[in-house]
Length: 556
Image: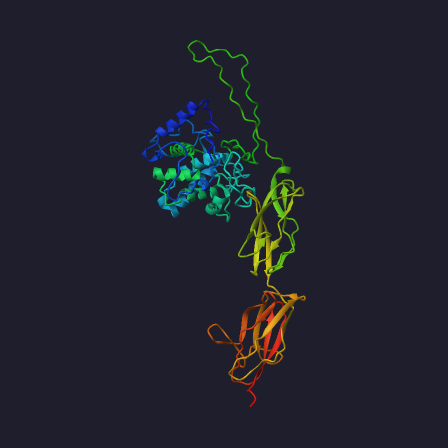
């Protein structure tokens, strides 16, 4: 997709020439190691090696912010690299965002030291992609207060990327959208997502997770980012555009000269890109409204020799953004009356999982995107074979997951319900899959079962299991040669089975009925002791049948 270069000019620049001067000034000040790698011509540069193709760029080649750095850098070339403690919000980096970049650099330095990832590169990409997480509007864990979503990639002015995550990350089950402060498309996040803040989740809207994922993505293919060519290839793999590369390079050079930390939530909030989500303020802050400046209706010209006689245009003041109303603010989610989740292997769960979204007043909240995810070692799936589905709450604040289908694995597992893209506790549901059962088992014929001492029984033993009169398929069955008496035990003589190695065994445990409910036992052998013996078959569910086996010498 073509980059949206020129979508926004650098703050304060009034002509294209001024923007060009800014690029030239920054580019001219770069050291030898920061020279742009040439692509041999204009237009978008194709990358080489292991860099993904155009249709697999980290952002899906979504649009980005083209603001350029201030013309006055924090430090002059060669000056101290210590961060200044004061400066404009435009040039500063919010505290949590800066900490996330530095933590990602340290993590990758430990796992891939040869990459030599600088945190300033992450900062440059974060600035261009999301304005440093919308000016640092993140909570204490580094998660944005609301999801940062790029435009819908539906081919209408942007690339066409059909849904790859069933809306789990971007809330769109038809097309993909770039997500989070580093603007990953869902398919790329599925491969490169990281848990940067060690909370057990990989959340593209968390700056720690997103920064670490971006670092790993940029280091792919054994890149050494201290080399200009490798750094350029890395940036171009993020968004395949030379204009994008130049913009990122400008901020990268700017941050290398020094920057300063600003409190979370006080950075500059960029406007939404065309078709993207509107930025939302920190719910904990309430900006004071400021009346817009009034132009001078009768400007007086400057004195002779004092410069231009044009009046100085007023500086527009953006309108104050009010925090969302409590009735419209998602405060949490809860179980909406879901009962016990139990099903027999292969059957559908009778109970449906239901969750309720609550606002800050404790009332129901509609139109909340909820993602249900099956977790744990299980082959259970939602209707349609999906392990994750995203739905929206109704007017009563509730939403019900699709029918849950049990697999063959008989164990417990968990279903998680989370507000999509929100940093809120998940609602957890425990589900149990029990083994198939039978309440009756019987032989399929009534032939006498006899064998001579030391020979094998000529007739095979076949049984059929049922449950409430219906065929009981896949039911576990145990076969044991038992002794007589009130408390039978496993017999140590008489008829026996053979295991895979040909050894004598008198109990078999890994047996199951087939699709028609029948079970054909392996061959049975007689030892040298004549007599009448008993074979007991027991099913999962407690059904039992005892079969007589006779060992006798043939008649003379």
